[in-house]
Image (cartoon, rainbow, N blue to C red):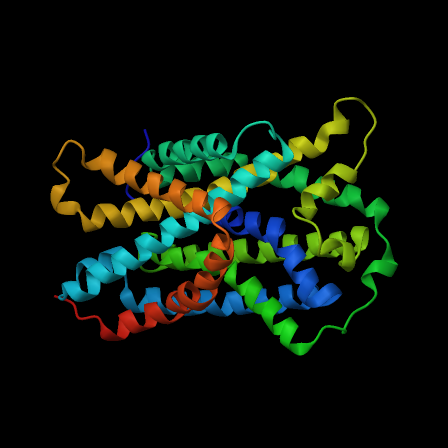
Length: 364
């Protein structure tokens, strides 16, 4: 029987964060880096990942000072003017980001697998399944992805190695040509993708060995994700060139489709490999929906004895995620607005906010 106490092992933490960080990074980041930096995108990945490690050390220091997870720390705050706004901001941010993940996930499914099915139907099925997964608790999700880890990672690495046969060194030879401003934008873009590390503040931990183990697990996940992203970007540059890469929608999926194997079954390995992003994008969607629901339940905890409490606090956030994803798809400029929000509002708050809360918080 699974328990919902928010505690997961270090190995489960590592594998969950690999899924949470890997999906969007390998799927969407390469074309943006190609437009900004060309071949120098590899330096953006290296430096951006390095800033991610600095951010993780900062979060570790915050956790050490709090001595407990963020949710428990907020419960001890004397002022409601601190606790409720923080819970609201984290919940709103989680649901908006979950909507973005659902939008990308739905586009990928429609683009690569089921083009004849409408966007709305795919979106609804994905969000309903995600809501069902959230109802199972954090530990249930951790155990599922613990099992799936090698089934997803090994085929992905194998397909990347298979793409080496088409690698052209001439495509990857123009280094140190990007403008400094564009390189800095690329670094910032990479750093944006590691901000889900913020939610490690909400993982329940204990002082001492288990606390240190959790930090090491998250750091290991960040390192592995950076290596996978760096290797993927180099292979994409070597197979397509920077000029072609910048025009592609899902270049890593296109790369999979160029790999040919003998045999009728293996000719459609690209369709099978979409499962890599199926699981990784679903993990990120589930992460944000989980915390959106969790923050909502904390805000409305005084009604927890009501029969409809769990249903409303699960399906209302899920409906909001659907609405956000629908708006990003059909409202002109919706996706650009999200990127501006994430760059200029969400990311600064996730960096500065924990420190301000630690300084300004007063325990009851």
